[in-house]
Amino acid sequence: MIILVLNSGSSSVKYQLLDMNKNTLMASGLVERIGDKAGETTHRRMPGTPQEQVFSREQNIPDHSTALDLVVKLVTGEQTGVIKDISSISGVGHRIVHGGEAFSAPTLVDQAVVQGIRDQIPLAPLHNPGGLAGIETAQRLMPGIPNVAVFDTAFHQTMPAEAYRYAIPAGLYKELKVRRYGFHGTSHLYVAKQCARVLNQELENTTCITVHLGNGCSMAAVKNGRCVDTSMGLTPLAGLVMGTRSGDVDPALHSFLADNKGLSIREIDSLLNKQSGLKGLCGDSDMRDIHHRIASGDKEAELALKIFCRRVTQYIGQYMAILESTQAICFTAGIGENDSKVRQLSCATLSGIGVKLDPERNRQRAAGQTLEISSRESQVKVLVIPTNEELEIAIQTAQVLS
Ligand code: ADP
Image 1 (cartoon, helix red, strand yellow):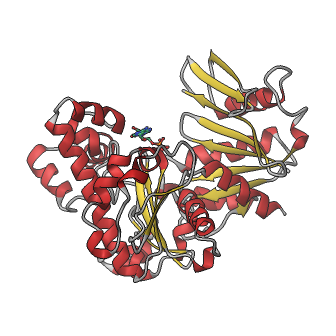
Image 2 (cartoon, rainbow, N blue to C red):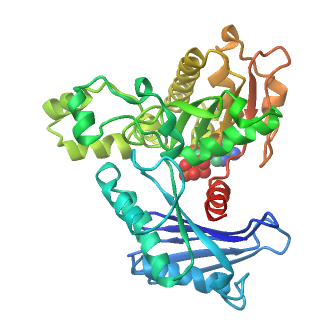
Image 3 (spheres, rainbow, N blue to C red):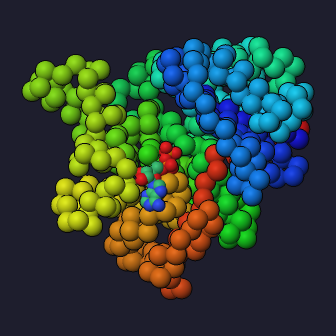
């Protein structure tokens, strides 16, 4: 069974073609700057194998339809391709950011589902339109091939009301569905499944904390395989400190900045999403750059790192408190998988609640591998688990289709 996974953003489309029977990645790529004159495409044939070939080109890509047409040509092309024609594709899995309360599982797309995704646009005005464009284009260019929508919010739909409701007037929940949703759900679920595998038990018996630290950062408390709390909220701005996003701040900050700096709501939104986080604290949003600066004695960068890790520590403590008995803490994504210093600082003060790293194991390079980095006396296992959102989307798509 061959599955095409599409992650359509407002100006980019990421794709992977996976052979689920042979468990191989056949092709992957990225079409960027859709709508710009100089659109860029990078296509990898048989990535990660000795036969890997990379094709890059620049061309005008006015819209998503042109982008997806290009993807189809690349995966079927004589030199670039890995399949003869699109009829070899069993289904297309689409990453959709927001499913609201309407979608708690991957869903086969029909007209009602398209409308359901459209209905969530007020909750994700920057993200759902890209996903919808991907679905509608796939329906047009690949008629007869089923589409499956896989939602970033779905895994978190099992949270109880005491975790997802905010202490604001109840009418706002009833009228506008103002509540915590959570994001990165596909990654959290994938990592929780891998954690169950490492612990050699069923997901249903697995209680763990998943710590996704990339450009966007979020955590989930997973009890017996189901999400019971997560750090992102109504939007992906809440929770941990991120590359350019503030994470949690005093909710009165908006009115303070409006009153004292004359900023509009839109300007404050942009300030908290694009100019804050690590970038706001020290000017750099990439953790590698921050480490380089710390190595040369930069105090601002050092403080940014400390604030970033302290927030992770606080959330781990919070989640261990509500989970009662945590079996494992799983670090994942760009920073979580690669940055031993962040892992060390985040766990440094947790020995009192049974979490102890082995410094030597923590320093090992993960490089795509799952590692156990806790010490033998640690009551909670600490794991590094590479995430793979595209693979999880493909797995869920295949499950829906079969
Ligand atoms: P995205 O959320 O865009 O998918 P990633 O999961 O790729 O992001 O994570 C990006 C972050 O991971 C960046 O802050 C980057 O600095 C960090 N990162 C990637 N590789 C390393 C590394 N070897 N050491 C430390 N940080 C790393």
